[in-house]
Image 1 (cartoon, helix red, strand yellow):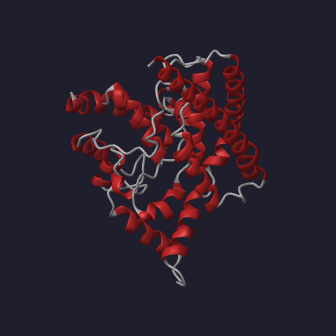
Image 2 (cartoon, helix red, strand yellow; image 1 turned 60 degrees about the vertical axis):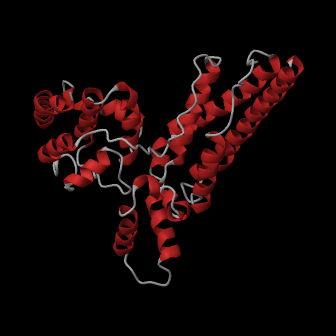
Length: 320
């Protein structure tokens, strides 16, 4: 029995070492080939194949690899230290690249790429305007349940192009780097739900009704109450929320996260809603309390006061 356990342990350790080497190679390719090529070409090299590669790397490799043994971890052995050092260097380079060029990566033409691919695949030899193509695309997407949509052949061939895989891979890089620096103490698997699929509703219709009543057309473009409900509960398949004032809506998100949600789901929701409006958490963290800063405008002060009152007198009691 002991020999069998030792044999299993050896195999497991070898697999982990192989995973570390593979990850380092993948990060080197991402950093030195794909991302730098996009940066140096000012985005001209970003295309369907790029997104297809990034999706494969994320879903089939980064979200599936094993980096910790299930039996007798050997993170302190010398060979492992060398491998982890190389991986840490590769992830740090990835992190630095993303932070330096985050605005560039965020603004890559994913929506246009998806629209053009939809037009080519589904509407060949037509004379539709771009607005008409967009309307047809929205019609297909909107009628599909969010969870089911991500499993459709349409999503697998066209829909996935909208995702910001650069940011998703950056978050995994930070997670790996932090794990290595902590020598894997307190290890927890990475949350693989990057598409933010949730079966539960975060907010009831009463909460959404009052937010819609007070701020529809003011801090975001006018949408229906049900569209706002689906968006705030991360049940939508198209982006309904068009922001008119980012600082104001950031403060709304801050209040919703901290006053209406429990800690188990609050961070998941915030990640999801920021993804809906194509905003990085770094930018959000730098701005979400701007409407209560000392140098705020009178308009921002009035908004913050009214929002605080709304939460205190109506929204918090609705969820307690």
